[in-house]
Length: 306
Ligand code: FAD
Image 1 (spheres, rainbow, N blue to C red):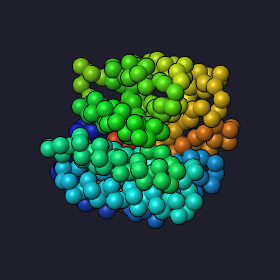
Image 2: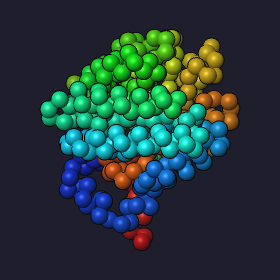
Image 3: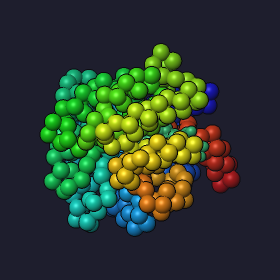
């Protein structure tokens, strides 16, 4: 119930105004976001890389309905990639892109514009020697995102994508994408989805995650295990025992279980941190609150005790 309300609020303009205008929100947001600008993102990236973890950077923004804003997002990624290169950080840091931020949700030619914009980001990433992973948004975008992935991979075979275990289709998508060179980031899924397309029960989502993991680990691709769930991480490690340590990786979000991130990296695993930055933090922040009721209590307490 609380999760549904928060996910509804994540896409509601009035709720957004209310949360954003409360100055006391900011300290809580800062736990999950590396800062408002590219300089903060570069600083945070260097810190994470320094203790042996890897990074994927997300310039925050989603559901863009203006082409000019989509272009501005592309420019922000080009600046980010050039700053990563000038700071010598491209070996350990790549970028993650939400296609709805670069045009996918535009009413006219959205998919075509998103493809062209994603192409510009991929070309720039290729020049500086790093990779791009496409985030996955709500289920109405899955076919479009996978179609853009296929197009991009013709010229940029290192482009990866996220798949969400809560969707009933995902086990098959994992089979389709478990080929050599394919990078798949498997997560549980963070949006409000109907029962017609997505498992609603947490246990069913976990079971689906394990089935998908098996497909990816037995396949020829590069699985990216994106979860903070200790049981799933243990199962992933077990399923990967026949693989070399550089043929898969673990991933977690910035600010969540950082000690566990360091522990996993210290054991010689590839551990990548998803590091968001920018001032469009609202949707991302609300999804983090929805994932864990304790975060809401923490947020409420911080408002009440000031
Ligand atoms: P959960 O069962 O939710 O959590 C397991 C444990 O992790 C919890 O008990 C708690 O200790 C800790 N934890 C989890 N979430 C939080 C939190 N918010 N705050 C504090 N502690 C927490 N979703 C998408 O739909 N599309 C994407 O493109 C996408 N990309 C992602 C990329 C990465 C690298 C990661 C790690 C997640 C991504 N997600 C994405 C989010 C994902 O779908 C889940 O919503 C999120 O990871 C929580 O699921 P979990 O596997 O950690 O398991």
